[in-house]
Image 1 (tube, rainbow, N blue to C red):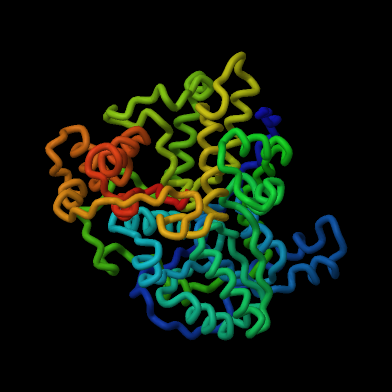
Image 2: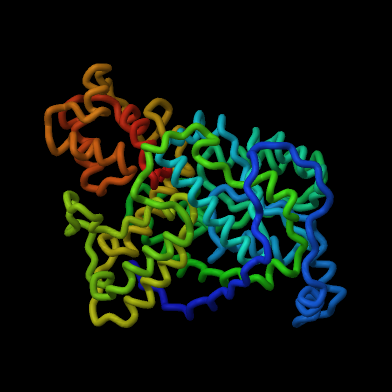
Length: 449
């Protein structure tokens, strides 16, 4: 039976120190050859080294030259991997590799998601600047970029969030193999989900739980999710040398025009941790709405989202799912009555966790062939009808309105998703759900789960 977690004390707020100079824009993708990054203030680092343990031990622990590889986790709150990187390093290079071939052919990023991603990277860059560091956005094939810069910067450790999508798992395996070749360590921690999916699978006998009830039972054995780690502060970055302005100028966040992304594809959803936290606080202000939220009672045809609309921010890791989970726990603890999973807000986070777990352990999860949990159906092939469904020309106003909103905004209500998916498949057109999945790459909050 599902047991409500205890409400933890909130983590301390981060204090921001505005950087003396922000990186200046320049052309993206340019190869830069520079020396080591600028140094932190000696007095701040000496204070950090001597706090709570011997200075020699602290120096031994902070011996790495670290490349922190952002993939998701585009935030500074509850970022356990980046925190561990800062605590173990004398120099740190925050890097995002913009591998356009990988992102278009494997991740299938469309124009709306490109805008959301670039806005999220720009927001992360500004936040890092305020703490005395910067984000290096390097364009190119990820393995070549890593090989070149690890050797140039004398990197001894690569840190990255653990992910569960097959292409990210393969990427991490390749990075570990590269680490054996070039002699650097790899640190990977869970930060994109509430639980470590491997622990769930172990308690489920090695196979994913295929019912929500079974899933909740396993979570009751695991106990509460880990509490979010503290926010990062300027002092964390002052302990390490950060990239200098020369690198920041070379590897700035590209503009949409740099990537030939059409401006008319702009969505009303703005990307980034700052916007995600603003929306989170806006929703949590109404504690009565939070406590009584039930997903089936939300309205799919309202002009503004009747749910939280936070899924795009969870998808890229601009928002921490653990932070949201425990903020909800605080509100539930003060309410006389509140809704419960599967219909509550926490229940929605657990649905997300459930599908992530199933997706991570199911072969060929995104296709019918070779998928052991998928019905094998002889779907029809009708290119004309599929095109009309994609382009909102079915003649059914409800379906066409949903598809128009999806194409223009990148977000639709979950009941609207159910409606267009049903219309495409068993409801009307009898066309494979795999074709529908390709269209839903427009969704800003897309994930395998």
